[in-house]
Each structure stands twice: as C-alpha cells, then as structure tokens.
Length: 186
Image: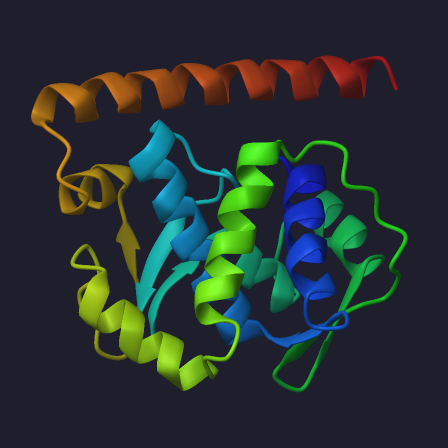
C-alpha cells in the first residue's frame, strides 16, 4: 500500500463532503471503488488489503490508520493529515495535492460518490451485505477478504484470477523495492 496515494484518495473523497465524512461510509465507498477497479482493470486504486467485519467489507490498513493503529511511519503521516472526530474522519488541511491519481481513478471515485453520495453509512452497510458476495458475516470477529474471492465474485475465470494475482504480487514487490530505495536515499 502506498500511504501517499491512500492519503490522496481519502482526501479526494473527503473534499466531496466538505472535508468531513462518517468513516464507515468512507471505508465502504473506498472498498466499492477498489472493487470496481478490479472489475475494470484487474488492479485496485488504494492497494490496501480487505477484511470482512459484521458491518461489511472494509479496507484493513485504512481502518487501522483511522483507529490510530497503523504502522508507526504511516500513522504519523496520516495523523498529520486526518483526525478522527467521533465517527467522522476530518481532513486537517485542504492543501493535499492530487498528483498520483489517474483520470481513470478519479472517474471511478467520482462514479462511486455519485451513486452513493446520499446513502447513509447504514444504507452502505446494507448495500455491501447484499451486493458483495465475497463478504461473509464473521459474527463478532474479522475475516480477511482475499483478492481471489473478490475476482471470483466479479465473475473472473480461474486463468484470469491467476494472471491478475501474479501481476499484483509482482507490482507489490516492485513498490516495496522502490520504497526501500527511497528510504536509503533519504
């Protein structure tokens, strides 16, 4: 997961709500945006991992950051940009640049917002329960949601899934290597 891109994605969505939004609604919309991107391109927008909670699917690392339980270096950067206020996530600044989002990614995020802007967080919980078959009720715990299960639910063939998973792993390895290089050069 690229923390800088995630911050841009979250800020892009918060801007549509005057920089304040119920974080459950945000997590559901970001999950649906990643799901749409997997369907269209075979890749996510956020690069996060996913979990099934009683209230539906979420982005795991993003939820941890909102809950102040992220990796230290990511959490510090996140906390300098966002604040959890009750059940809302609030942007601390409107000056976050939007340099890494492609036109396609903005189009997906805009489409998700257009479709779900007037939904409450409970409406989105009900929507994801009914429309995301990869989600299973974990009762009072959490279960990981694999990329494979998302792709299967989207109707991808076993060969497509194998290819997309291999491509995703290769991309993740490249991102990790680049991140390590940038830390060494800092």
